[in-house]
Length: 405
Image 1 (tube, rainbow, N blue to C red):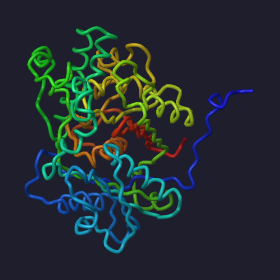
Image 2: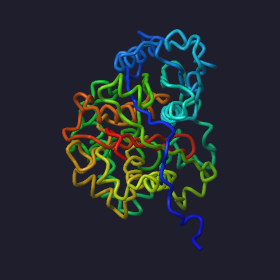
Image 3: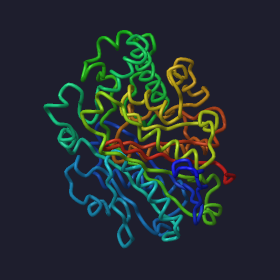
Image 4: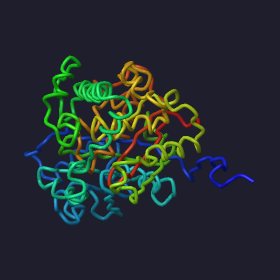
């Protein structure tokens, strides 16, 4: 008799197929002095409605979320009715840390797929200039035990482990190449926050001169702190085919978290990553044998260059140094085998409540061919998007151009 863990994965089925039919984003920047929160949200909502050729009358439910702790504004959805259009409508409020945006996409998909609502508007935002992000994050780590391995929400252990596994020279060069690649992609994205114009010949100097945070985790490796909003509209198959010429289908998604492993032991022994487990489960139940070959683009939640590079191995189910070789050979470039974060990723723009929503939003734009300056040249039919937050909390989703799975 087979063990339970050896049972074949069951095919994923939905009550109704769900499509993304509207996408709206603001520009992303360190400060938005000309807008308050409702005004910023309103900009994204109007853009999404215009993209879907809908009005608020077409929306049955609104899913709203951010990290309210960071702005210290209790129940911001009440205030934001002025910008979200939620007055008189059903609304769900979601806060799940860095994964907020991705959790809202999953919730919106489930609400439509279940038949509870026909059309759902999801809104993710953050206005970090109006709060104190660091004040909300510092309690994540014990100030004594974690003093030498953690900065804010990120640790230096990934850098240390990669250096131990691949050698200091190769690991440091790879992490900096990843960082510069993300900047090159961000330079093509007019909405991106940090666009430095970095060049690969600056790598050695940056490895030495960028301020150290913890070990070899340096300031240049880290994600930004941004203001911005993203809105997405989801509807069922029958309506999507009527109202949208280029619907993007939400094929499947999975959420995995394992808080119990965030302990001092993580500094000495790396457990199976939630990323690896989530990807394995998601791919198995959808019959994806070779994710690098199957997917045309991957919008990944990458809080730092070290974590982003390390996580490509986990998500793509790679072995040994395959992920380093893919980076070194240019296979994550826009014209590579699997373009990674054409938008510039989280390192370039990080409005936390919207960050994980920007990943599937950007992936959907790639499938539609509407990404603008950072559009991939080849046809994009299959896209992967991830969210990350809290204590090893992973959301992973698959988007498709056609209903042919």
